[in-house]
Length: 318
Image 1 (cartoon, rainbow, N blue to C red):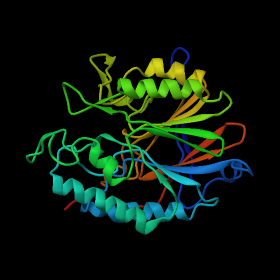
Image 2: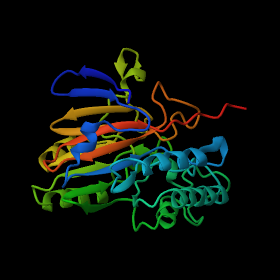
Image 3: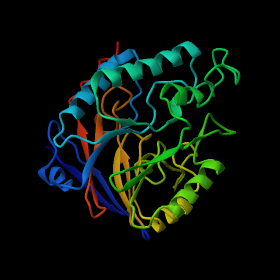
Image 4: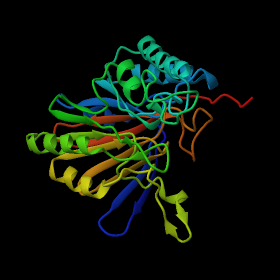
C-alpha cells in the first residue's frame, strides 16, 4: 500500500498531521493488528453523492465491495453525509428517487450494519426550487429521516465500550442555503450527554461539516488573510473543542471538503476523511482520490486512520 504523509506544525498549540494514507486492496499489518482481541474496526464513507449520472451508483457499489473484503471485517459502516446528489435544490420526484437509489445500492452490496450522518446535500428543498415549499412532503430534514428510518438527524449509540455521536452540522443561513454548526437544542443535548457519560468511556464525534480542518487553508487566503466561510467549518468550534477535550472525546470525523487530513488538537484527533466520490465522480480532488476511511480502535482508546482507495476510474465527461 502506498503511503503519502505531510507534516505541518501550525502556530500556537495546534499540531497538525496532514496525512493522505491511501492504497488499494490491503491495510497495513500495524492497522490490522491494532484491533486486537478487544479492539475493533469501523469504516467511514462520506460525500457519496449518489446519482444515476456518471456511474455514481456503480462507484458506490464498488466501494462497498472493497469494504466487504477488508480483513478484519469492520463491525459497522458510518456514513458522513452528502449521501445523495442533490436534494437541496431539486424536485420532490428527483429527491425521492435519489434516496431510493441510495438505499437500493446499500442493500444490494453489503450486509454490514450502517449508521448514518446527514450532510448539506441531504436536506430537501431549502433552495425552494421546482415548486418546493415548506408544505411539500419531506421538506427539510424530514425526507432524510423518513427514508433512512432515523428518528432525528442527530443521535448517539454505544459500541464495544465507545460512545458515538452522529451530529447534524447543517443549519439554516440567512445569507446562503446553509451554514455549519449545531442548533441550540442539539448543543444542549450534546453537552448533557457528554457530561453524564462515564469519564472512562471514550467518544467519537461524526459530523459532515468539520469542526477543525487544515484542508481549507490553501484555498482560502484572500487579501492577505485566511477567510473561512460559514458553510465551510462549524461555528463555535473552539468552544466545542474545549468540551471534547474535557469529556474523553478521542476522534472527531468529518467530510464535506473532499480532502484528507489529521489534526491533533487538545488531545483530540480531528480527521477530514476524503470522499467516496472524489471530485463529485469526476476524478481525484486536489490530488485526493476516491476512497473511504478505515478506523482501527485499540482497547487503550487510541486509534489508527487509513484512507483507502478502491480503484475507481472516473467516467469521461461527455
